[in-house]
Length: 141
Image (tube, one colour):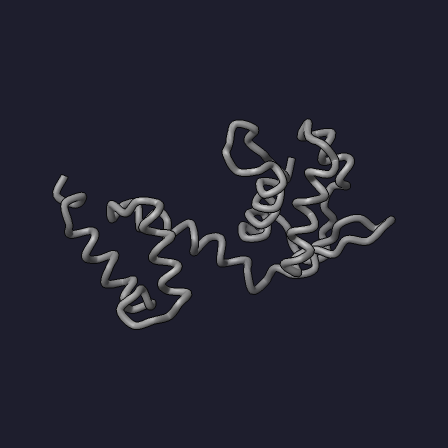
């Protein structure tokens, strides 16, 4: 099945539905024009309430990734610009973990990069931070 959830995860099920579709877009499994399973069918296969799936689909619609229309279902309308972002994000997380960074540090790094303030995680600073972290105590272990 295209959409996967982990009932034991702390992440809300609707967010997992949306994240699963985003992941498929990023990996190229889904493309513009592809139709998603109906909310009713996805809910049945996942063993969740239909409204849970609809909330996930609504989040994707709000992001401009899918179109929801009665009788037509959910159709992918955008992905190309974001397709590679999933892969790059996974690479960032992998490299940050190799550098010994905690999840919180990665989130702070991305937040600083979004803020774009010098010395607080701009793209150039991020490269320096990763290099600094990889030569720190975690790299010596």
